[in-house]
Length: 84
Image (tube, rainbow, N blue to C red; front, side, top):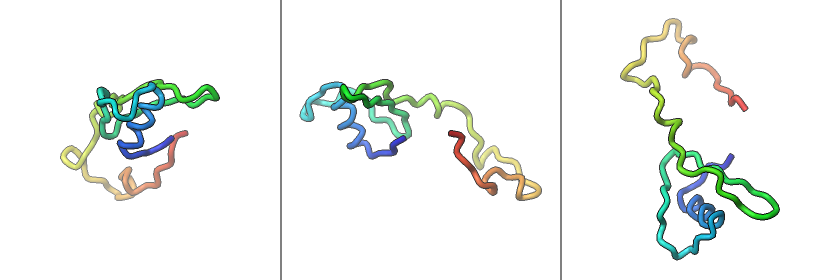
């Protein structure tokens, strides 16, 4: 996993697709998007780009949250571990 600035992602996209650095950008650089690239000995391959489906699901926020009782029942008070 790599978290990167849009400029880095733009350069990686260009490398994977053979675009020139001076070529106009015709692809999205969406915020919080998932971009998938595969590195092999043959080079970089574009697998998926600008996937934002994970942002479409409804999420609980301050406007819909219910009070927690006891406080330890609140998800944001517990330690969160990655599920990898």
